[in-house]
Image (cartoon, rainbow, N blue to C red; front, side, top):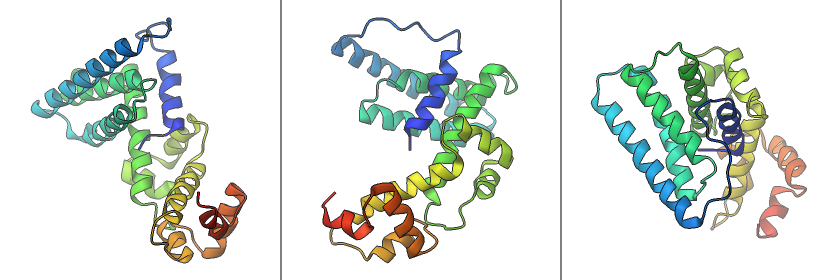
Length: 218
């Protein structure tokens, strides 16, 4: 699961990389499509090579999370994020193979992006748990709570803001399902601590109660 915030973080990191090409004129659609195909083939080849080589499997979940981001970007045609994602996938694959030292600046940048990507996926996986917290995700990620907060600060949205946004997004999706589910079930499925909390947060975000949102046919 990618988001605008995570893409922004990658963009900021790539802005400071000497390997990032300067921005040029907009490319023709055919050229952009060809670049996208080449990027996809490059990333997949790197992952295949990484899987076939002896490696420190501790980096594997980060690589898998970023590869999932990459696949989602290609499916959505999000060409703006794809080059940065290819670079991150490549660097994580090289770290896993031992070709890049984990302590190097290049590796640390790739690991930060990989950990953020995995953290977001852990949030999605455990979204229904009202007890979802920075401590829980940090433990699953194997980092300190402070480090986790730093990862999210770089995106412009805190951990709690990210969780709330994901819960609201999922609740909007569930409210539009047919046949309609009881609103209390929607609140529970999205991890809101109570129905009252769900109504308060949803109404503040959408300007409508959950029932009004559903009736409006959003």
